[in-house]
Amino acid sequence: MLTRAPLLLTGYWPDPEETEAVLRGGWLHTGDLVEYTPHGDIRLIGRKKDVIVTRGGKTISPHETRLKESPLINEAIVVGEARKYLTVLPEPSTTADALSAEASTERLRTGVDRVDADLARAEQLKDFRVLRNAVVRSFATPIDEMYDANDDVATADHVRSRSD
Image 1 (cartoon, rainbow, N blue to C red):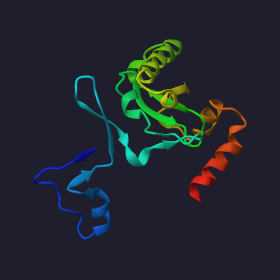
Image 2 (image 1 turned 30 degrees about the vertical axis):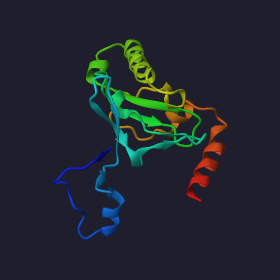
Image 3 (image 1 turned 180 degrees about the vertical axis):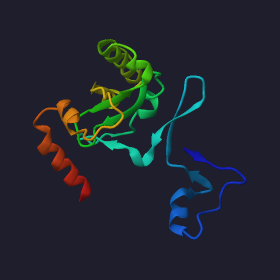
């Protein structure tokens, strides 16, 4: 999102490099990623620094904000850095917890499908695993379950190439 106004900040004191990074040509580069809704409103969809780069090189903003618009989703973690597609780990809200596990999963699938409907294929969420506890010590197992076993080497190669 870019914005400018008569009373906009003139810079970060005393940080000219940060000022130059966000103020260019009189416009404030907020770092927020937004989209227009069908009604012409602006919807915040993420932060520029939070983008995911897939193994195929697609740069995608995670869809956590859109997923959390569902009353059934309390939190959501979109995964896909260095992977061939995106997946999500939703944490159900107390509304979803009141449903049976099967009904809750089906309703969550409907919510994910609703978000996917407006997205390009590379941006769509291909799979999900439900997180049932607010405190989760490790995400490695459910994340790896959503991908092929051969992804580990390709993921390591992709991460190494991004750090060069």
